[in-house]
Image 1 (cartoon, rainbow, N blue to C red):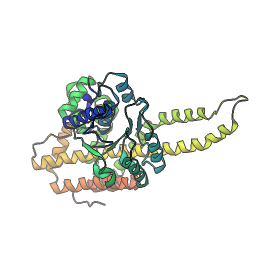
Image 2: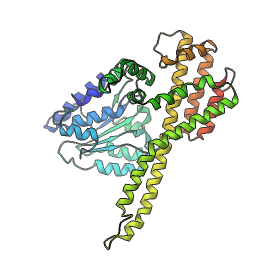
Image 3: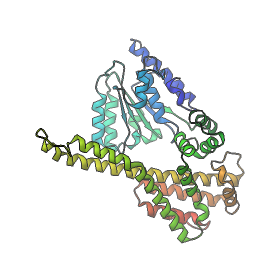
Image 4: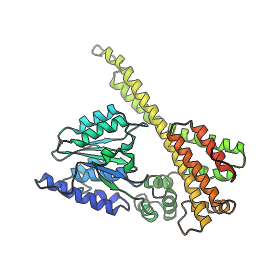
Length: 396
């Protein structure tokens, strides 16, 4: 199967990328290569598969058969071990200018295997302003065989000068049926569970897979969606906010604890800690303290990002709940993301007005904005739950 086979519901984007891969092969053979360019920007909503599309395109450029999906080159790209592919996943809240300059240097070399040198930059929107300017210089004057693949939620998330120099590939949210089909065929998920997960994830394939396969993820979702009917008083609002923030912190700790331990142990080993012998460079051991401090700083930033991402997923689940309430209030013939919560949705729809629902949705979106601006999570979420409590409450 072609490397593009995993891109669910992205037929238009796949056609563009396949045409470009053919043009790239033509350029390598001495042709004009019309339809191929050195900088690409993959955009689309969360879960649409931006990084998967970029990875598939990288494989199609590095594979002699334009992404056959079964050769060594395609396999190396899939696991991130191809010598001509630099795959960047920002670990923290932002990506610095120093990191970007190091990345530009890596992308400046000639390809090892003679085809292309590719830099795949996930979450490129996390680049700081200085980092974006450093990246711009590399994109403006790239080496002849270097290709930049940038991923961001929207073209507007990148500075105009970068966006204008990239070929933008826009991905869309896959249909529920397409996501459910992937879960059933690739993960052996029962049809009813697959449909539930695909609908609840609103087309986010990774989220749908976690909902389908992990009971703990489903339990946390149920906890979040039980919040609206639990907000009967101020005390309950404070308790719900505390529980939501605590759960996000626990998720982040669980996701990073094992990884942090492995990274720290490997770094200590590199700097010779615990070793002995005449040949041991004591200065090297002492020099590891600075590297260890830098690693701990990165790990702390990563934990903060994961905590924020976990909390944001919970807030988006609440937005989807109130979107369903609004759909019922207007009698819209649309699929409910939270069909399993229809009773709660219909009850709230009867006991409130569309204006109340819109106000509550605004309160959640304001909370997301405040969290993005580094407001204390507990304070931001408490303000949100208080605003959700009753029709007459104001957005704080």
